[in-house]
Length: 388
Image (tube, rainbow, N blue to C red; front, side, top):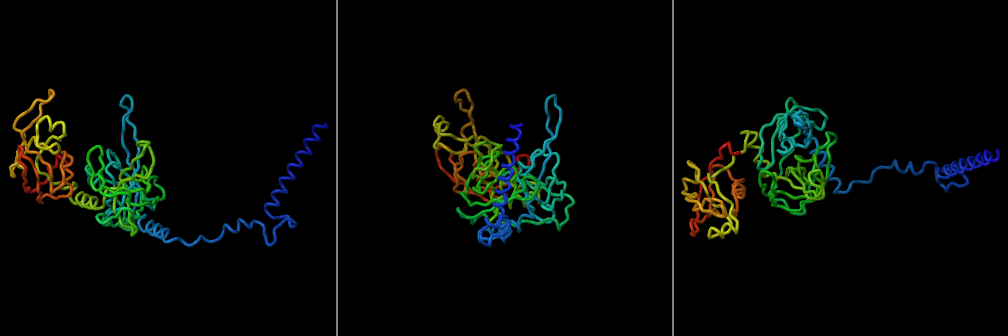
């Protein structure tokens, strides 16, 4: 009985104390209220208007409102095989940007790669099936086209000039990784003219930015303060690997490249790339020393293809073989060292030097024949389709 009475008293004291504290907190006890204070004063203060936007915030809001209607979510379905070759479907998402009212959408090639089906979700939450128009492995770009979307629902994003960018310039990135509301991140241009190597190529003149670009934002636009697309966000460097997040090192394919590639893909279904018609071996200092060559870097031509402009210009391929550590090395061909004054150290570098050219244009090639340095002007031909 005594224990029960003590427990009842303690419970009453606790409840009374808690009630008193809440009444004091709410200002409902007049003798303890502050002069002029009213109940729920802090709650009323929270209902005030937002402070005016700063000039920086105003730019962010204006660019987002202007461009966001043209940024879409892309979901691809891929059929994969498990144990005992059991098929199952897997989905992955990325972003894309509307190019025109015909339904053409620019994105990264890796966003749509190996897709069995593609579905595009517009910012108004309508969804459409899409077909691949063309892809470009070299620059990790692709164009797809939505089926059945009216022109009124499509809001093209204009290209800007990526050739006049400055390090330190403000940039904004918009993406739609989750098929919900578009996301906006901001930053600056950290560096220009980067070369980044993918599994299939080297991409030149890449824009580096510290604007947050996370998985799912690939294929979305990188924008200037005027809301113009100056690049397509394509990849990040993350210490955590493929599943890691942004650490302030992101890359975008420049608009100058994206515009050219997109125009070719829409018109031709492929990129019209130039070619000279040569194959070669990448020189290293060790290989050059072993073969007693006049330069230690360049592209040693092993084969000049018949009917090409390289053959018409008189370039020479290998004429014999040398045995080096049990390997047969084709030797005796010309060594390409420069294209239009740009160093060429490998087959990839040669392809990169020609990337911004068009079939029919002329380049100035510097090369060695034996130990003699020479130059030739070569008219570029169109790369055969099987090599694209």
